[in-house]
Length: 313
Image 1 (cartoon, rainbow, N blue to C red):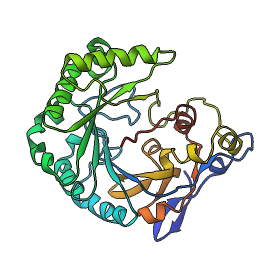
Image 2 (image 1 turned 90 degrees about the vertical axis):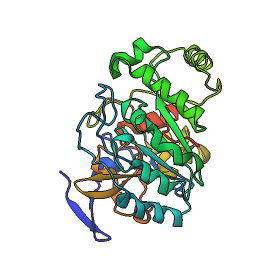
Image 3 (image 1 turned 90 degrees about the horizontal axis):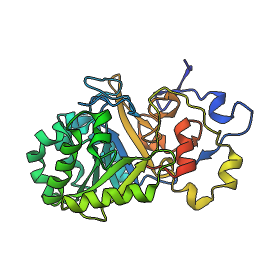
């Protein structure tokens, strides 16, 4: 375990040499934050599903990251507004297992648009009626629902029988209520992406959904704490194969994520690195924005190679 330093009266892990250099001794690539356009809140790793591929390792009763309440997030919403934030986004786990999620959304939409990532199954369906007030919020809420494949057989193989139909029904119901909706899907190695997308488009049309609905494709990020072998992202990589414009599109350049762990609210570099305490940037957004972000996490390579981003306007 890393030693701890005191920074702004908050415990922050000391950065290891691995944060700065690859095993070969090359300087690691990094991102210098440019501002705070989007603030993510992790609502907790509790989930009604237990998918083997889950990048958060979420499942029923999981407490690696704790469920958040409205008083937990209010100070960060208020601080983010002073930093020019443009959107609040929420992920899990399953956000609709957090009892305060609707209250949180009602509060957040007073100030900025919101995005909610959900599996679209029972927790959301039980609370669909509670979303009625959000239809008339000052700022809009968009829902992105996980639909791994355009076929129930493939989707349900990991998420459980009936989850495909529930997720699709939720998409239809939210769309009919007037909410903007989108889909998160799996990206398989060697896939014919155009053909897969066309299958989704056909499914949308069949269910009365917008044919041009946004589809966000994600590679396999592996489970928390895993260390798959990926190429090291060095400074040379970031200056040779990326430019100033492309570097500004990395999530850690314009967003941060707030989590609750062991009763403490902490700010992490992005949505993909909360399993590594070296990406704990402090207890406030202002403090977190001062940290240069190392490209050392294996999921950083996905951002480098595929342009992976959880963000969506």
